[in-house]
Image (cartoon, rainbow, N blue to C red; front, side):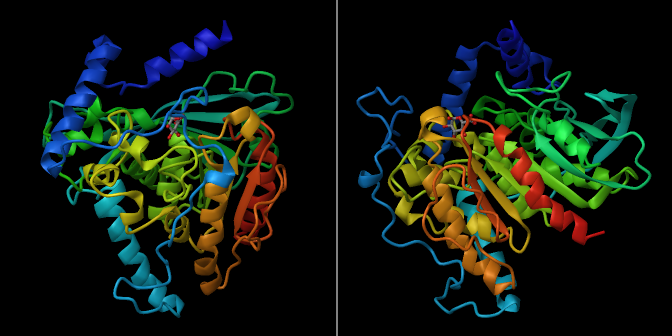
Length: 446
Ligand code: GCU
């Protein structure tokens, strides 16, 4: 019963609440629209066919590689500390310039650019509820971000944000913001014991916020002419370097930061971001682009998130570029699934982590025998290793490890943390470790 309920909630929340029309669309027509838009983008790119990605089902003949000995890793990775013109980055001052170069490459080739003229967002608290979360008295604010749509009234976008802070708190508190949905009563994974992650945060005297990603932008290609991307484009298709859903979701988290600056219960200097899977990717993109975010908890983000795209293990660029996932990225990214290859990418995931520096990032993943190998834990670990030199240049610490440690080793000595927990596709078992990792940073500020 609980699973059916969760399925229904997830299905409903996949669509922007402001677009009632979406509720009537069935999956077939969504797929059809995905494919039409994907084809249109391929045409614009002058591409006729793409290499198919491997299957996520280990039983399939074309299953993604899950054998470490067959993982042909990159021949060479782009070096975050070398400028595009080949000169080295030697000082923090030079890194500022190099960071701009890297951002430009991610903008143009992978996640897409933020349009110059995104309309403004007006935040309004629509409801305040003093209640209990477990045994903790809390104040729950339901907040709506109304995007100005005077430029194109046919599309309206209202961002859903829930902000939960300890009821008795006399001063602004740290808040961890999750990309997701606010399940009534707090969502626990089946079989999960102990306090929920929300209760764990409240136990510290911290709060949490839930930012609904699909109230910003739908999670499919069919929705690209709606949501915030469609609003800016006035219902027209994207340009080749236009933003994809990941960048749009991350933009939404920046607007949530604007709201926090107006909420006296929240300490805007101590706001972190968390997400799982595609929302783990979004959390990392948000950290990379929004300097006001103090810390990131990046859950099983895999390909398109913290995993090195050049590594032939688990999910591949060809999967990301397919009609099922291309909407997360700029259309330009599709070309790396044909005629170009992942080795032609001018950037890779270690540089996405690197541009979060010097701020702390915790990279989380589950166990291969429970979560599967699609996410590629080692590919994320290696990206974290290769981001290290940038942290070091800025006077911080990388991970301090070069070799992947055994499962359940908490690598949190440096400013990049990594932990592979014993569970499945969830950040669940890593919450206590993330909280311990975050504490000194949050204490330092106060
Ligand atoms: C698919 C996809 C992943 C993604 C995941 C999720 O498995 O291939 O890239 O992270 O869905 O978001 O659940």
